[in-house]
Length: 461
Picture (tube, rainbow, N blue to C red):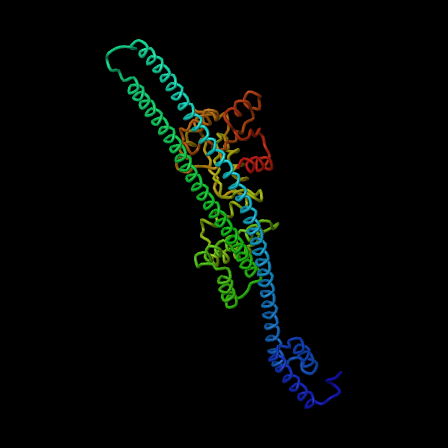
């Protein structure tokens, strides 16, 4: 309506004015106002190429702005979470240090009390032992002195009035000197015992103090290392989460590189640690992509092409891809299509039926008419699972003999635990019991359906 009420010249004038305003809004990053003005331009000229160009530019800049805001919000949230976690851990660490210091003080005090008691006990024991020795020496000395005095008195009485000049006083003095010397020797021995006991106790105290200090240093070192590892792991988790987020929201590499460089510096990560974490994130992302692919009801060629491109982008080798797919399928309960299955049956119809059913899922399905032929096949291509008939007709070996050779290791030690399924129309209790004794995975009665065959094979693998 607006277009029909004004002239073409007026329309062009208004469009030019609006486009100048749009350019001004873009420079000022007023993207919403710029879009409103572009819509007004379309009211006058729906095919205006300048308006189209401005619109694409504004939408792209809005996407980049929203992406930058999201990244900044994530960085801020992550930094706040990391700061809060670090502060909490520091508080806990200091609290633990204070508690540990108090406990160590109590322990030191208790040890000092015990050591003091032990020292006193050792000294008292030494004093008691030396006291016993001294008492014995004193008693013996007193007794000997008394005996000497008695003999001296008797000798004096006998020699009273004699002409010879006997000096009983000198003899008694010599005996007293001898006993005094013995007493002094005993006293020296007692002191020696006390000194040795005190020196031993002092050395033991010094040794225990050194051990205590060494143990405290080791505990402190272990605690610091543990806290360092925890802080490092927290940094790894935060860095990994941010890297995963940028991959999920498809941040362009020109924006991703400076962000990761800043984060690497913030978390004090080395180039080797960055490479390790980047590889870990890529593998995890690839695993999640594989899991989502196989959780889909049906996969298309386009899905597998996308997975192949992602594998090239992330540097996942073919061997790694095969192992990851195998692991994901196992987690999801899906059959392993890389499994090698060997069928042993003398009936060609049974072999063809089983091959036809299993080749719909598994890439490698082999067959043999006899057990002897199967053993030769096993030597060149080790299977993941064997389906074996019990009565093999023209074969010299039966299914039981074949299984016994496998379990005994004749076909190779690595195949002793090879999963084996018996297929037979003989469902007698004796055969089933014999199969269990040979550690046969399943007993599949003939005839069997496609569904039962697929289920048994899947469960056995």
